[in-house]
Length: 136
Image (cartoon, rainbow, N blue to C red; front, side, top):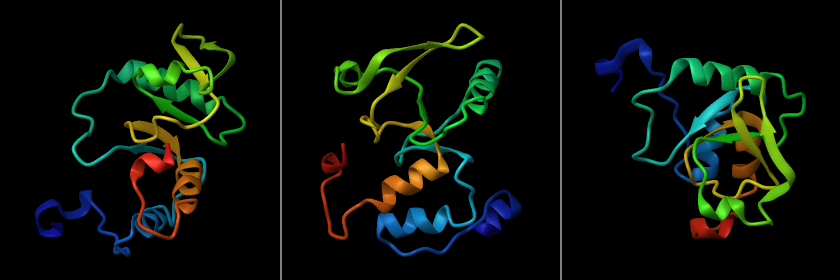
């Protein structure tokens, strides 16, 4: 793979178990750095650069990044009263509307998360084989 892509990729050797894999990939990444997390077949092919830059500016102004993540869609389950905080609607200075989540339900959806949040989630995985739905 490195022969084909050269310096645009970095190969990182990790253990097979998902928790160890994520820990290895995040080893040198600071907690405040943003990570696009997706499952196997989902990745960005096109992005509205101006909108994404505005979102980045907005989240850069958040002081406590603990548990912070940005989903790029709204799934029905997100609107469950247990998943959103009271008065959860947040409008940034660009007029974009965000919802303040109580938790990271819909975790398996593609989203941008702070590395510290992602690390904490995977560090909390049980030391046994489990079904992904257990982590919702």
